Image 1 (cartoon, rainbow, N blue to C red):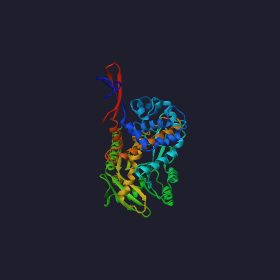
Image 2: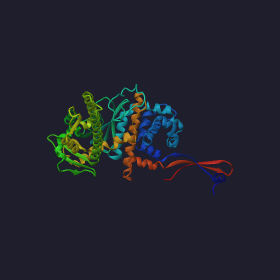
Image 3: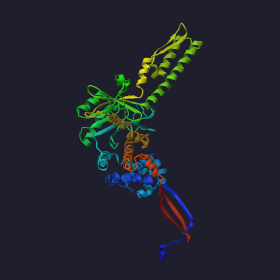
Image 4: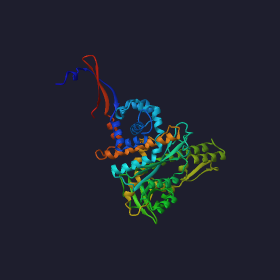
Length: 481
């Protein structure tokens, strides 16, 4: 029998459940942080920094938030941290999420970027046996909200994000074929994409040696000078080509010999004197491009008919004004105007005439959904594997950084904090990939996001009872999924 001091009488009818807080997904984030050895890595590098709370724990809080619910530091301070059990998991009080501490943490981490990249590369080898033989390189842009006068790399340029009103910068990311992140760099937005390749290749070779690697990148980085430079270094490549190069392979589009690479994509090998070309055609893209062209065509024809009726009614009589209207339509419908043989004003009959170039239109229809890959990869001529390797460039890594890690937009106004913000996003993506690879063994059908959504159902609650002697008893409990 237990001693009397260890026995307490509670009133079961007084049960109250208080303060449900997110636990499962936060626990997973902290476990991934430990799995990658980031707790020890940052503890060692930030241990000399003074503070009431260890800076390594503040950074862990930021990285876990970036993985689970990416928002601003102010959001973490005001809303996210109180709704989670991160205080229990980090063994810290609310001081770890004070907004000034979150911002000051960003000021301390940028100088460790190179060491972090090497640490993660070693982890990818040890945990998953990753190899760095095939390297995928691409760029993504992000934009700034508010003033960014103090950020030297914030420049205006072509906006992939449809925000030409905002300054931008470019994040260049290198990943393995499995999606493991290696180095990343930050460039000014007005820096030409193709000029960044040499810097990235030399950075990878400095850290991982000059092995005979296969470089995979998109058409924005593809230039003859870059490809020649890679060949001279003994490197291989598999790249996308600029769209005009597809014209030289137009006859192959209508010929037989296509192979199924997936349910919607068929591919064909087209050997050339120096390199090998892979012609690919996606049925999904065919339908999308058909629909886009039909929509633009209908708008153009509608405007031409409207102008034709105005001229026929005599609403517009002056030839100069009519010619000006035609020039305006040409500017407005430039993508479809190239399919017109002519569009002119017949002054004698007082009408507008136009004629379509049907041969040119049919050639464009044949090219819909098609794109061309170019490779210098001795010994690898399996057309399906070549296409699958290239497709990885457009999938997990870069899509995750944009959509789930939400690296855009940037609200910071200081250059050093902007670089630190991107480093935290990089850490969030590394944890995302680690979770994906660990979960693949037991739940291969689930994405990392789906795993976290399931774990989010596990919450930490406080169960409170009234005792018979007028006191209260509070028991923290974790719900069972």
